[in-house]
Image (cartoon, rainbow, N blue to C red; front, top):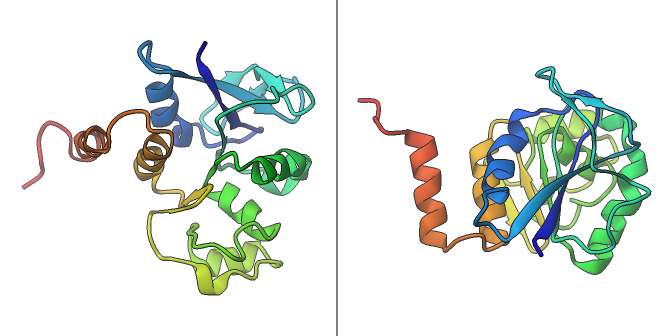
Length: 191
């Protein structure tokens, strides 16, 4: 039986931020499968115009899953109903990976105050997460992995995927690094 990784989506989610990791985790040889979760069972429309029927809503998610991935998008200020799921992950030490405005959401609700993290920028977090108190733990990098929380800025879909692949031990680290280099640089390197 494959292990489930949940990706939380809401209307206006940034579909490209989930593309690489979903493709890797859903490969036939992977021991994982991706399932989407949303606040309710209504169809969800991404920023790119894809319509998705969520696999779960927050009231019927499985009791056991391997990671919760929070994808950025335009409606994070309306997603406070996901907080009990985030709390359960923290309590159970289930890893959470957040990118773009999902990191801003975590910052606003105090989840990043005491751990090394990143986000779209420190100024962005200060402006859009007024309750944020983790300024001294902000690291200006594409991704930061801290114990059970991975954070990434909105330009780091590849780096975000790399950290998730490492955290879930999907493949040996050397293969993850090779995968990243291939997708970052392609077949032909610019001169």
